[in-house]
Image 1 (cartoon, rainbow, N blue to C red):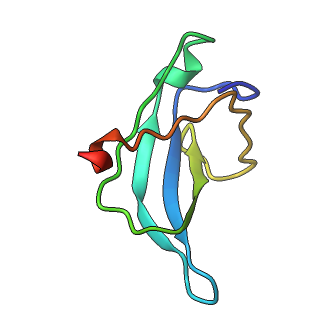
Image 2: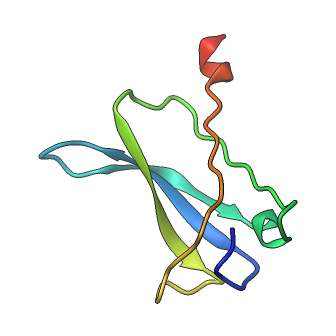
Image 3: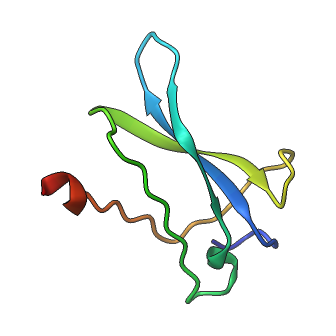
Length: 83
């Protein structure tokens, strides 16, 4: 993650349900992504429902104001769901 100086960000994975309130699958704290281009953070969510999902930034360095990040890559690994 670039474009933000810091030490941590909290990201919530949400299920987008049309005409219904979104559902949160929980928030994960990421720290390694601030370690430069080689930094990488992982989060795992389990037993998700099918449909559209999105990430919502909740906190950067403990603050909820002025939230903005630039992310170069997001990878979704569904291999556990395949087994």
